[in-house]
Structures are given as structure tokens and as C-alpha cells.
Length: 358
Image (cartoon, rainbow, N blue to C red; front, top):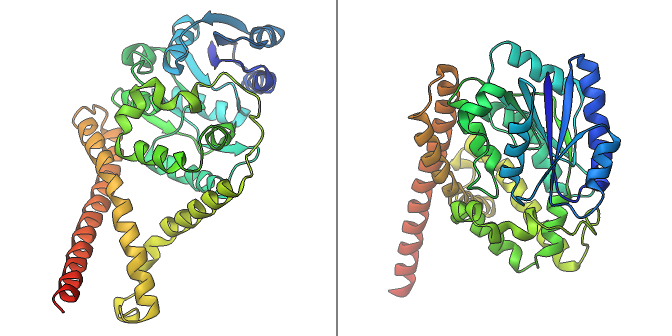
């Protein structure tokens, strides 16, 4: 039997479509199945919508996504578990592909996601590229994840210390047990989280929020207050509305520009420096871009630490090789960025010393 676990809090607007897609996908693969909607303290008609679609309703009061998913996983009767977010539309190809990999011995996996609704252009661009990136990196978000019951029980499920990024920790735990497969076929999920960010945080708060995610990720993951407004807001009004103020437009324009710079940065590796001397306008432009990329690349160091720790705990050799390749890439980027930052600040120091001394 297949068990579909759907964590839900005030999801009456999205749940109907989600459950229809699950029914259609499950019938297409031809396996017995059950749907468990884990109703986490909803105050709307979430439970009624779930029952209309013949889903089992499991009432809980966690208000934490990891604990809610775990409650559904423990109550499931199937040997194959699929965790599907309440605002996610799955498809038969993704389910059939996941079952094939499980039949071949995989312990779990997930699918990349594409976003529905109104979201900034850079979000769509990154999401499109992440379909390939997720497959190469071997990691995926929590909108659609699958595993065997044995693997779920062996790992203990989702880490309930985390209020955010718990799916990443679960993926790492599954990788320690065996083969983790990211599918090529993406699923569709709501882009409301991005709209919520712009609706609940001011333009001045947005850079602070992003900086805290980069420089203090563990605190962001383990403190509910850090992500309360984004991931645990009970108010669904305005979920489909994207703020359109001047401040939001300016912020989105800046982030789009940064995204383009990050994605096109590797091109400069193939352009000889002799063609872009520092005295030329193009050379100055290259220097500015390089300065930004070097400092941005320092964010690879936390990934290096996490991946190194998990490499030491990896048992399955295929997953070890995949993780080792990802570790090597992150370490290379971190070292290159660190060397670049040292060179840039050394040069800047000499320039300042030169001007100061006349």
C-alpha cells in the first residue's frame, strides 16, 4: 500500500486540488493507497474538504511542520510513504518514477518544484534551473518527498528541532541509509511563501531577513519566532496577492540583477584577463563583479562544514560519492572565494595607503 501524508493548517483553499491530483496519480499507478491529511489546528474547513475526498483526517496540535509530517508518517499503514504539501499538485509520472526507484532499492527521494501564481521573475528563473541543480546536487525541497516505511522509522523521520529546512535534514538522514533519488519530473507548488515574505516584511526588513538566513542559519532553523510570519502564519488572506509597492519593485529589481550576476559569473573564467585590463571600463566592471562574487561565495563555507560532517557518517558508497563530489565543488568555490577576498582587500589596502601617503 502507498500512504500519502498531507500536513495541513488552514488549507481549505488549496486542499481540494491537491487531493484530486493525489487520487488521479494513485489510480494511474494502480496500487492500493490511502491519504492521510494531518490537520494541524486548522480553524477553517480543512477537515471537511479532506473528508469530502475520502481522506483520513488526523487531528494534531503541533504547529510545526516536522512534527506534523511525523505524526502522519507514524499513522500511515503503507510501506511506501509520500509526503505532499497541501499546496502542491503532484502528477502520475512523478509517483510512478518514485515507485520504480523504490522497487530498485532506493530508500527515498524527492522531486524538484516549479511555482504557480505570481512570483518575481528571479524566483521562476532559479526554480527552472533548480530542476537540473536538484538532480545534480541530490537534494530537494519538502513539497514532494518519498521514502520506505523502514527508512522513515530508521531515521526517526523529520527533525522536530527544526522549524524550517527540516526536509534537508531528512534528506541527509535518508542518504545515510541508502540511495536517495531526485526525480527529473517536477511537481507544481504554490508560490505563496514568496508572496508572504513581501506581504509581512518591509523592504528594510527583507535584507536583514536574508542576511540572518545566510549568517545564522541554525538559529533561523531552530527558533520558531525567526520564521513565524513566513512559515507559520495562520492568516491565508492575500495568499494569492503579490505586493506591488515601489519599494518591492526596487527590491525585486536589485535581486534580479544580483541573480543574473551570480548565474553569469562563471563566464568570466573563460575570458582572458589580458582582454579586460583593469584600466579599461570593462576591466573595472569585471573587478566590481568579481568583488561581489568573491564575497557572495563565502556562503559556501557552511555547506562545506555540513557536507564534511555528513561524509563521515555516510554508509552507502554511491551516496558517498555523490556527496563527495558536491563537497569538492563547495570546497573549491569556498577556497576560490576566500582567496579572491584576500586579494581584493589586500589591493584595496595598498590603494588606500597610496592615497593616504600622497
